[in-house]
Length: 262
Ligand SMILES: [Zn+2]
Image 1: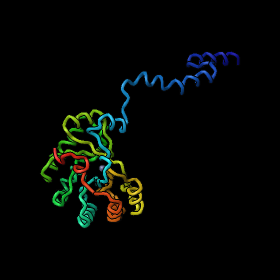
Image 2: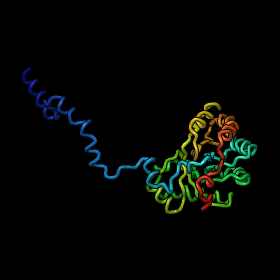
Image 3: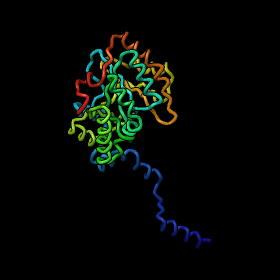
Image 4: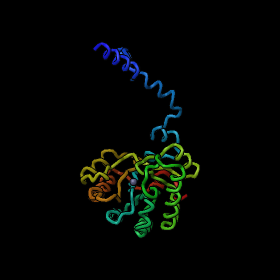
């Protein structure tokens, strides 16, 4: 019996057991963590907000505080929703900005031609909607350049404005964009319409947040099973209410004083 206890004790020591009080090991964790973190990671990634400040000339989320609002529609063209949005804009004589996904433009080129013909402007929303910050620089450049070529063939210009999918972009990609004279244009009013929200909710999300110089994010295209009926039903009322409040509805090139093409 005694021998067994001694054997167990020896095994315990050999396996790295310790008699130190539990408190001691606990004391070394949470408080010390930030110190060792900042020691090890030399370059902290800037947040999108910080990047926007640092690259203010390239990266925009709003225009000047004049009584203008820009309606923008992402993830186009999509035959289920884009024609309906175009019909409403035409009826109310509103010109807007559409951010085009390259592989969708390849499938539905006539819808891109229609946007341009009806006075809207188009921007670059990548080739197949990846999260830019997770891409290599090479893959990122390909997304922009290839889509730019597709759009140029349909619209007659290579868009100057890029809207990153999910609004997401990293510093190196921003630096490249600046050098290549692109503008990155996100938004400061989010309709959250991609969630399939009902008309009243879409309307409220826009009208409760809008102010002079606002860039409004909506969608006129979506994935499998997307429902943008809320956007389509809300749009006439959003337009009427914005005009009641004295806003002029403009395209992004007008609002930001930028050329639409490179
Ligand atoms: Zn998108």
